[in-house]
Each structure stands twice: as structure tokens, then as C-alpha cells.
Image 1 (spheres, rainbow, N blue to C red):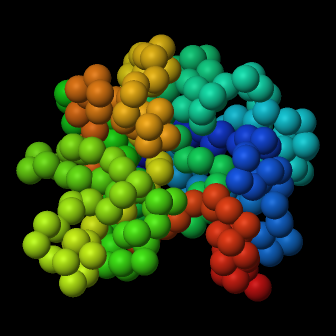
Image 2: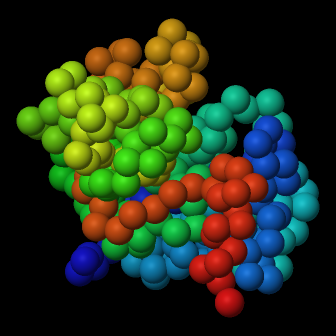
Image 3: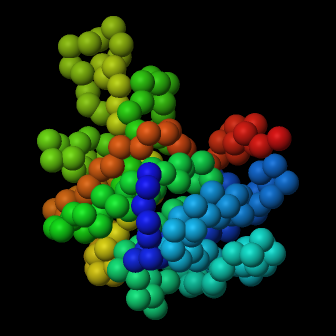
Length: 251
């Protein structure tokens, strides 16, 4: 995508060491480099177009690895409940109008898809946030609760996010009521700076705590969430199985 400048953007990469499913995840080895460094390297194209990039860490070991790789990293509060909280702390001291949250376990998200997402939010006057999705036909992934699904309305906005397959096909018992395809949510979020500051002040909703999906807080509040179609599939690294699969991509 031919975009001349992303100078209105701050990219924040939250990196948390105490992941329950994969402890010390930011420092996990991916082809001889820590995962967090791989994530930062994948975002260089955005930096080259003027975006600022900061790793929001909760451990000095992460900061040291980032500094060795030439990346900017700062310490944020250890008691943050989510990556968005960590992003909001960094955004509060920034003068950039837009914030892109790329989790520290997303080394494969396509840079051009991110640019498209950023441009789409900049051009949307009454939308506070946006995220990515990719059309997926893998029915094993449709049944996987670690793969988040999203439903979209006719305006290109999110109706609901769930760990269950969506939509439920009532009369198709042969295929376990699964759809032929689903919208696979890619956990990258773009915010207007005022919106992320407001979001983290909102209390967690019942839907959010049930599904353990933070974006449902915005749905509960009636916020429109713009959905941008990613041309390339991507999946975060949440488990040891994900990590082993990711290592296969690095020689």
C-alpha cells in the first residue's frame, strides 16, 4: 500500500512476562532471536513511514533485549490487567493522534494489512477503534476456542466476538452446524488516542469476563468497531504448540 506518512501514529507493543499459558513469552526463542525482537522487526516498514514504535514492558530483561536490537522499550506498571492498559499508559505521554496496539506475541501480522487498518481508521470520523479479520475456511480452527471469531454487520463493523464458531448453522447437522467459512479475528487494535484513554477507564463487562475477550467491553458500551479485511492470515503465539509451529518459519 502506497502511504506517504504514518507520522500521526504511535505503535505500542505490550510485552508481558507472566503469561499463564506460556511464561516468559517475550523472550522465547524464534530462530535465534527473542519473540519480542521478531515482532519489532516485523514493524520496521511502519517506522520507515514515520510511525513511532515503543515496546511497553513489565520486566528489565525484555527492555535489555529490545535495546540490544536497537528498539525503544520502556517499563510500564506490572499490575496492568491487559495489553491495552499497558498501551494506554504509554499513549498518555504521547502527542500522536492514533495508537496501534500490536501484541508482543504477533510476529506474523502483515505490515501492509496494518497500514490498511491505520488508514481506514484515520478516514473514519465517528469510529473510535478498528481491528483486523481474515476469512478462514479451516473448520478445525473454527472449533478451536483459542481462535477468536467475529461477526460483521453491513456497515463493516463488529457485532460480536466469540471463542465459539460463528454463525451457528442450525440446519447443517452433517457439518456440526459449522459455517462454510468464518471471520477469524486478528488481535491487533487501532485506537484514536482519546478513545484508548476512555476505554481503559471502563469497567470490564460481563460478556468480557465470560469469553475473556477484552474487545467485548467496547461492544457492551455500544462502540462501533471498524473491521478491516486482512489479505494475509496471522495468528498469535499463545501456547507451547503455537511456539513450536512458529519456529518452523525461521531457518
